Image (tube, rainbow, N blue to C red):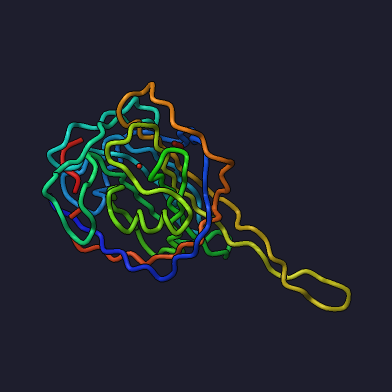
Length: 256
């Protein structure tokens, strides 16, 4: 199985997003048969899943981790924490996506449902750590259909996005506990009276659902340095994703 994801950045706005480890969060942990994560042979039997209601049909957020093809199997505790080995999957592999790819991939699945809740549009964000304790945000915006993919922290575009948000690059040999998340937001706002005039009300989006997992890389006793308090949803990097074929706590063989 080979899969690649071409990322075209629309804007990279710098914002720091440091965090301590997040606990796994999900409603169901198990098989998600409809997910292929954009490739073939990618395990879909251990996925942290959070369903949510939209205007006409339910939506779903799903996260998992699995081995890159030819790499040691990624296992899990059945409760949102996955276990992977440090190292490079193929020392000779080089492409525009990057070299030095890790032995494991993060897999995500988003079914936006009807993409709206009571008339307000839903938007989605993916959170990832290139260094334990440093969370970066990928804003996916609104979606009209299922969005899924399998990503490796060795990909250049992920490290560029993390760097734009003040975070450090990924080291495939580093051990520690990495956190990954998905969230769905409902836009809020409207107008409110101010004297005799109407003034637009600026409000934070309402989080409708979220899913989080952890990936323990290497020795489980390794303690990563905690970051400062995390500000969920403050990432400002906007990217457009276009998939074409290679290729991480709340919610086995062959990823790219």
